Structures are given as C-alpha cells and as structure tokens.
Image (cartoon, rainbow, N blue to C red; front, side, top):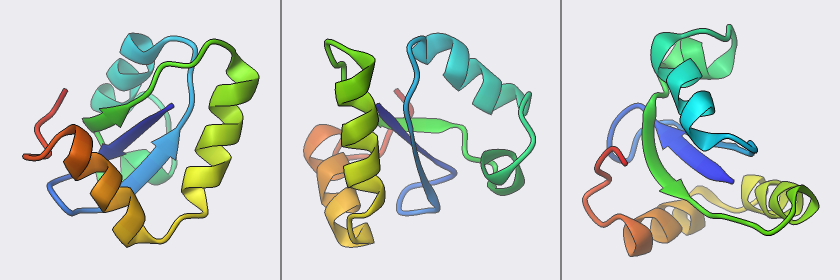
Length: 85
C-alpha cells in the first residue's frame, strides 16, 4: 500500500501493488494514463508492507475513505518533509 503526490501537501493518490519499485517507475514515466498521470503524481511519500495482498487492499480501501487531514497526518508521521522515497 502506498501514497504518491505531486508536491508536499498536493494531490494524493493511494494505491496497492505487489511490486512497489515497478509501480513507482510507472508513475514516474507516465506509463499509465489516468488520474496519476493527469496530476503528475510521482512522488512516493508513504508506503506500508503487508503480509498478504488481501490485507493491503483492505488497508488501501480504508485509507481512501479517510479525510484528507488524516492522510496528511499519516504521511507526516512517516515522512515529515514529504520527501520522495
């Protein structure tokens, strides 16, 4: 489970993948059309590892429904400066 953005406190996208390095490369190169490409969301600011994909998908779904302030707080606790991980 991961969160990407275009800049600190910018647009947020929450996703899930089994191969984080490959997925972030896709975000950075614009390989997939859609929301992340449109907004230039390529800065990895948060991630979590899960033991199985079902848990990761459930966590992603939960976080997608959180208020933006909760997501921002989660990111800041993990990555205070919103640096690209």
